[in-house]
Length: 113
Length: 116
Image (cartoon, rainbow over all chains, first blue to last red):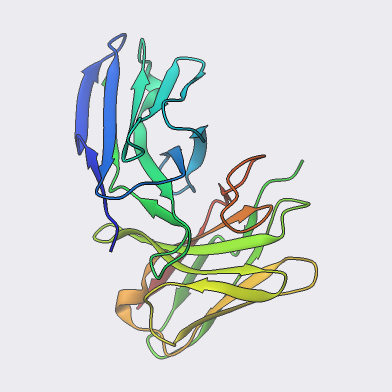
């Protein structure tokens, strides 16, 4: 079945640093989504990408939909302590037993003040 | 605009019991998907409902079932609970299946189920 490879698995950075994480897949997606999840809460949608090559920003966050439609990256600039959490990528799949959203395993971000 | 509401937030059940979880989607959203999240397996798709019909189903045993009502609210049921069913159960709403635009695939805070 389809799988998303998300990297890195975890990151420990200093406040103010930039962060980059990415997801790759062996198959194409029509939509890429990036979520952030805080402990005990559901994932919160950060950015949605709908077209190959699309580059979208949301404040200090920037994400891109890869041209091959098999990858996406998320950048966070000038990190702050509240950026701590787990970031997930998700590809929107048209059906199949794995369902509509295929998730990466997540990137756990820790920020040192 | 109210978000996705899941109840209850926490549940503790005994092995062999059954449980029902509830999800109210964002107003105007007619599709509800359910996911199970565990540390080992991550987020795994359970099923999706649209217009009171199950549109897609993941690879979970028949003990996991769901339904959707005419007001788009959805419930999922797990019968004969096993220890391995302990997880965070999340639902996500969207306007229609496979539609991520206009706030689609917005998740609720989840129900934390512990089976003892």
